[in-house]
Length: 578
Image (cartoon, rainbow, N blue to C red; front, side, top):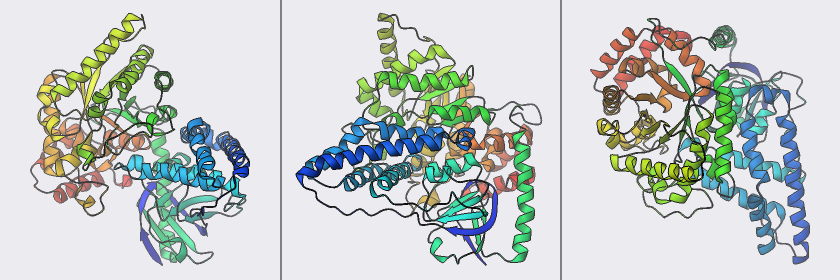
């Protein structure tokens, strides 16, 4: 028996025989063609795109995909495949350098994937997997290769692979594919999102795995603890069979929470909002019993595709989301672009320290035409429902005033053309730097609400790059310095009587929920799949208990001590969550 530890990305327990599949990349050598062959190679590209689009249409229309509401991921792939400028980059390479269709496809797709992979934000860098997925699909049609076919499985199996693409995962038949484990991957990858949506237990980032598994070996995938057990003994199998029964019962109990409020035992109501990236994800927020959308990331309108989105592109995306949410609030964060998160169509400076450079609201304030395009679309959509706008990475009062002044300029432009909008739209800011946290009292005088973005706040407070493996262990929301800043922001917001939420990863972490409630947070914006679990925690505690825990944590002087106290408290309140 061997136990391997990875990253848990989709909860549940799977026990079945292993099926190892080859999911490594195609390697395409550069081959030249004659000038007379260029037209035929370009035609091959067109046919491959057409077949890939049809194939995705077939997958998307499958019953299990519609039920799981993950069609937004496939919509991203479709946008790429239907983007004329994207296809033109491939055909231009064929024409100018006289190379084969497959080489041109692989070269352009990998350039785009490398662009995403180099971004210092796990949520965005893991989008590179989507690009590799599209590349693999196109190359399959160009080369006529047949992938590992698991559609014809007739026995239950656990899939083991180097990596899996989102559409590979979406094609799994849940009746036979009980779970999967991969050598690569991360929590926020689209493959992980698909697995969670389909309810397939999954563990990723296991290192060298598939080459070590003997044929017909029994494997346990523990998607709750991030553990894979190879060739378990009889006692371990019995223990996991009992554990799986308890997990199934717990998940069933969570499902009944959808219509119940997130309310503590002593009657304090907490708002649970969802973080989304695409319009189709709004439906998932409602399915999980969310109270609205607290963070709608909009930069992906720029990062996907080869052209800058128009005002109507923005408007239609926002309008679709608002109509889905009906009367529930939708908070749109303006573009968090710049530094290493740049659209292909824009010039960007070469910076030695991009995290401290031209990014986010700074980038918007220097590219006013692009900023105003988005603001016009937001204001036009504001008449459709409870829409609010939020500026990211505000570091001082001057930046907030500048952003509000530009918003007023856009309002005047709309007035000139008699375009309706909500003149009283709520304006908020993200508190993501020590400077904004320390001047919360000033900023609160000119903002309608705060949203604490813990991911960047931790990074800038502790001077730790969370994507740097050499120092990532130092990245901790439980550091006393971070908690003191958060506590100060909460006090400033309460004094000014403005709205306040937490929208970073901490809001999705079961161990930190009691602490946040005890510190005074009453609105959380979190990863959509975590809404039921966090709601269960809230309904199991009292504000008095949470306050006692927060006071105890405030008296401690190290991250390790605080994390131990938080975990112990969470285990006592709701052990089945852990």
